[in-house]
Length: 264
Image 1: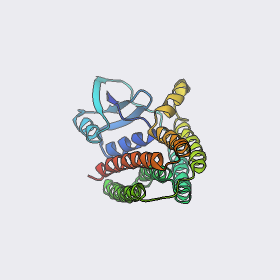
Image 2 (image 1 turned 30 degrees about the horizontal axis):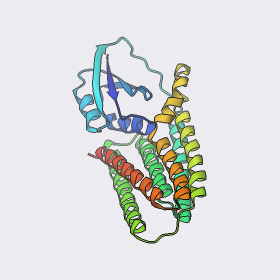
Image 3 (image 1 turned 60 degrees about the vertical axis):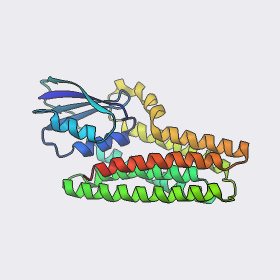
Image 4 (image 1 turned 90 degrees about the vertical axis):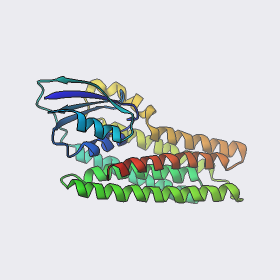
């Protein structure tokens, strides 16, 4: 058995972990994957050469590179029997906040909330693909990934068009208090998701959970919407909301292209 360590610089939340798991699924030489998200490290236990594994990781464009390969006597690995239950839980939380943020975003006229809801939907797609593809064929998984990726891109493009319409039009100011309150709850929800997904890790890694939360893209987006809400009230302008909405739509499209890579 060989043990190969990869550094993956853009792996900053469990969503990227699931993308990597799906990408490497089907490589028969892999015996186990051990993720260290806070330190951006992935340890792959496998037989044979690393060429196919390394190629697959690089194709995701997450800044992956091989650090070292060595032989190991380890042949038994502790699998988390509750993994599917945990995935269902975080999928439910993400999808619920997609609905909440999309609804409140439309009502409050906040593109920041609408964009953040699509980011939540993107995470739901990743967890959903992981779950629905369990026990299924690689072809089935790729079809689901392609559908999810194109759907996500379509929604983001619609969002861009709406941002342009509001930027050049005379729109009513978004409700800043709704933006701030809903984003605070979304921030808490993301923190809970990250905590739940790390429950199966060893207690020695508990101190790393906080750093994971603060380095997560989702948390940064939530904070961005909160700041935009404050600026909307302070400047009496919808521009901060439109700017944060545009930034998040770009991130959503980047995530969609990552998902589409799984369908190739």
